[in-house]
Image 1 (tube, rainbow, N blue to C red):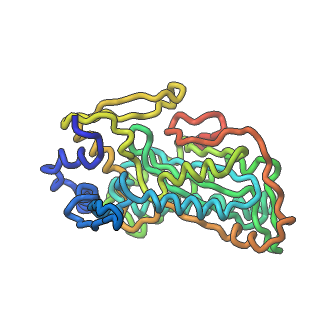
Image 2: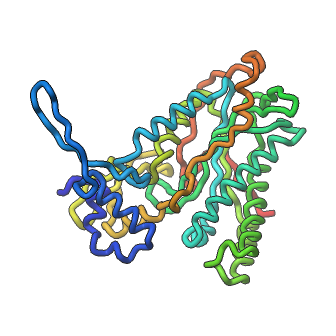
Image 3: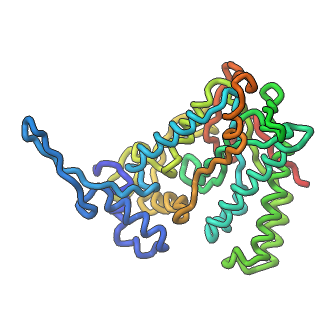
Length: 352
């Protein structure tokens, strides 16, 4: 048995890498070269015992499971330092799998519109005089995978329970309630469908040409249910930060989930949320594991996590007495639950 690692899996498929698109090929080459003589290295020597060692350079690609650990830790530290003494809310906005084909050909455009629509949705609700009547802050993290590495595009959002009013005062959310998820879901659905149509009309989706097919897809999206999850972080906001931080500079797969590899098939550990969160193992061919992994390669330079912290930054200037204290409780935090497996604290929008 070869030691399980994504690098070993990709090496077993070296002869087929030429069939990949340029971005996927680049990512695979980075992972193959990571911590090998190809990237060079440096020597360490002890001035006491004269013991020496040679270490190879890392590729530092965010898709590599062996890299960016320090960057993820730094991200978590920055987020913890910015946490306000208020209850935070963890929201998840899920993209319907009807759009998976569009994501395949135009990932950067669709992911960008997802961020834009979620922020517009939350911002509209925050500025509503009947709700918070102020400017929200938000940290958002894009995930494109489920536990079995299938495509499951969703945006995790960490939102403080309050907003900064135009007069500079803090407007707290009522108790542990932020916004009605049913209304959020419908606003999110309408906003994203409208933006997708405008993007098509403006020629920003050039690989999608059939207008009749576009009309059919968008009509089906408006008639389907959309998943939005919302739950207050009553126990520890840091728990959600740590969860999101694991993927702030990485993507779907860690070497620790690869249990065995015999050169042709791989055993992948996963959590089955439909079966009481039980840990299970599935066996995939090398080709299938690599295909699933490459579904989650992000466009070069695309920002996977984004902070829109106008409210939080301005709130730092407020007197500590202006902000309410966080409310302690024993509530549990949200985990990455695949589509169709959400508990009761979510809403699927009914057809309009």
